[in-house]
Figure 1 (spheres, rainbow, N blue to C red):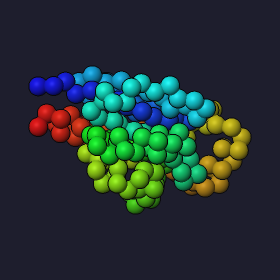
Figure 2: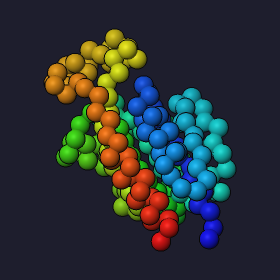
Figure 3: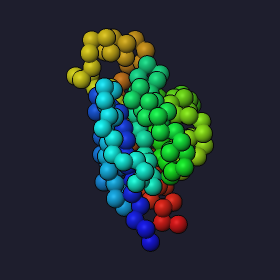
Amino acid sequence: MKMNKTLIVYASRHGTTAAYAKKLLQMLHGNVDLCFLNERENSLPDLSVYDTFVIGGSIHYGKINKSVTRFTKDNFELLKNKRLGLYVTCYYEDEKAQEQLNNAYPKELLDKALVTDYFDGELLFPKMNVWEKFIAKMVLKSDEIRPRISKRKITDFANKLNNEHEK
């Protein structure tokens, strides 16, 4: 059986999305590499050698990180023919979080993906600038400003990709 080769690409502003990417790196089977998307420049590996792509980005002000948008746009033709896992980290749950996930990626990639999910974000106030803190406090109710990292959701996400590969 051919060994699956996976690339996890992600953009993280304050570290939560990076934490999920690193956790997936440990949980996925096969050869797995990690690639941080930088807004200024990206030195990407040879994408053609990967069977699977996991793409993650954080939602800020209702939009996914521009680096993720650029990566999916620039590599759309390649990605639509690969195994995909897509995720976002955001502060919302249920319908609002699903809406943010649906707006983050092209519909064709979402429809094709083996697994999509939203993971709980967290507000890391020490890493935020003054403007981000102000907006966060204005937009979110005080009872929503709590870290909510879900181990169950990331485990389910990884298991779906692992199980699909082993079929």
